[in-house]
Length: 245
Image (tube, rainbow, N blue to C red; front, side, top):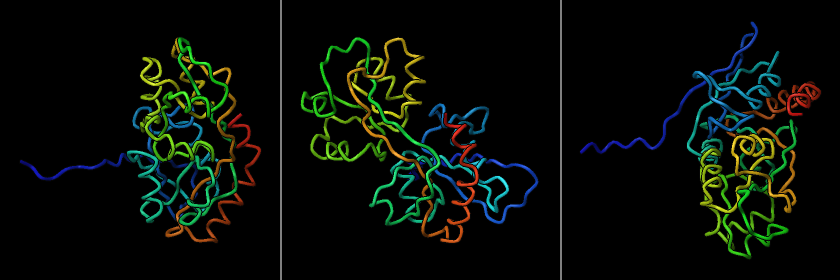
């Protein structure tokens, strides 16, 4: 028996622009090649708003970037923490993460919502009702959904079904294998429009609203390089705002 086991595979995508020489190429972690409208693998290339945002930020900068696929966001942060990846995108600030990474200036805002099957008969008004009634929520392993949700990860962990692929969570929701899925509103709305039984839960407020940053590994990205990237984010605020609106 072959004892060699492949734990995960890197799939490499590159983005380049213009005629400017790169002083340094930064690796960016992504865990899902189909996270529309942010990340989509099309004809062997990654496209979407997160990729476009990096193109905007790094245009005319000393940096180029390449995206490497990892199994899930928790693994992506582990690689970032140890300096095997330079950048994590679409990141909410937490003090625990800040021990290992620099957070850039915010480049967009994120709204997390709960989505449900239209045939759902549950009567809930908030996140506490969902967990207190023993209902299940599909989530991405390693993602941050706000302080309240973080508490339920410990106190009601058996009610959270983790998957790495967003499409898998919404497939489970469509088949009523879970009661809710928590997702970025733009992503959730994309899947809801394409699934006849899916919709944003109308009685539930947003789970979390947050500013979104790039995470830069403290092992591989210097404070001076962070300052350069921040300057490019601030310089391109208008273009980034237009992109995510």
